Length: 575
Ligand code: ADP
Ligand code: MG
Image (cartoon, rainbow, N blue to C red):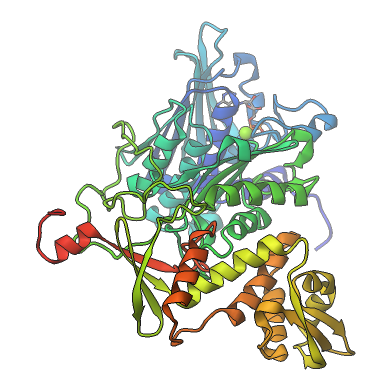
């Protein structure tokens, strides 16, 4: 078979395939057009997961009658005039491909009326060909109905999943837009039933509650305004307190200039901000918006426009990481033993209809909302003064606080204390102890380059190390807190921590090293402590900024409130 130019229908189906992958892509493109048109009210109706019917109605600017047909031509757009404009795109669309692509693989009807015209236009296309066109009355705005998606592309139709799966994809897109555009009212109807509505009053918190439910939506911490400015980059949004976490990164939602994006590095920046606050393998819930001048970001990377490139990727990474970190640190409540019965007013499984105005508690949320919040206190980490009672199992310190009984894991608590002490001293240099005899240590070939690249940082943290050929290193001094440890164990621990961190941020590399050192240096479980040692440890813990978790994110303490004790003893509520 010789080379030939593809017939236009085949070429357009191929191109359409890049934009329209499944029903949710249609919903996404139509909703983006509505947002770009300045709509305040966007209604989405779907049948059978979008396979048979998708309709998006908006009250935006509409399309003038003379341009309606043009809108369905490939590369026809009102949002871009020159190649130069590509440098600063402020709209969601700009490629002029969506309507053409959708029309190529379905039966589309559009009824639209421009605000400045008396009457609207109806146009109908099948497989990209116009089959009907006439005047039609309607208020200003646009309605696009897409029926029988992929009726002419059986290969694609075969790959569609169950109605429910397709519906989930659609809902995922709609909740993203509802979160990014809180001033717009989104209504979603599946198979004749309204399933979601955002209030459209600009209150992101209300959208969060509509999307995540009261328990999570109400507990998310808002990134404070002062944490958001880093020169040109503004970071806003909501992130979970360390008490709320999930098994994967899928609950981290990112927007760049109002566009939902998938960005592994920014996701990593959010995860990194929780470093030492979450258990390993657990991830936060977050909705984070990054806004920066349009010329600083290239959105023309991917036909579906879900990937972007930053001119200064490291700067954006740092801005996000810092803003999230500042929001989270100090906001971690002490986990308490779960009360025997679930809290009555927490509606666990029932989604809360958003149009019912929900009062969201303004106060700092506690892990279990039934418990009163911790006493406010001048201590940096907000820990109340604790009175040591004794030790259990040579592992836990028992203490009394104003609001109940505290059980403190001595190893985890000591790790936290050492960690914060070393991190505050790391700039002027951590005290170190020279070994009488330097010791050679061999590390694995995978981590050797990471160690070699960080010799200076290691020295500042009290661990003086020199390359000694191959994967061997000579350890000359240890941090003073580790004076009695075995040098080989210390270096191997630190090397492993270094091998695992991929962060470009110096502070995070330091954190990883310090973490490794503290793990070795902290008192072990099973070690009997004197009363003075326990009191010393508790006093130091009270001075910590984040006393409630160890540097690996496990809790250092649990609390049993006076109310819980009363309940357990059948004394009624607190009497
Ligand atoms: P793009 O959004 O990239 O410009 P589309 O194919 O999605 O390309 O749309 C083509 C053009 O049709 C848009 O540039 C816009 O002028 C017009 N348009 C599409 N949808 C709407 C709408 N809902 N309201 C007003 N104008 C619209
Ligand atoms: Mg578009």
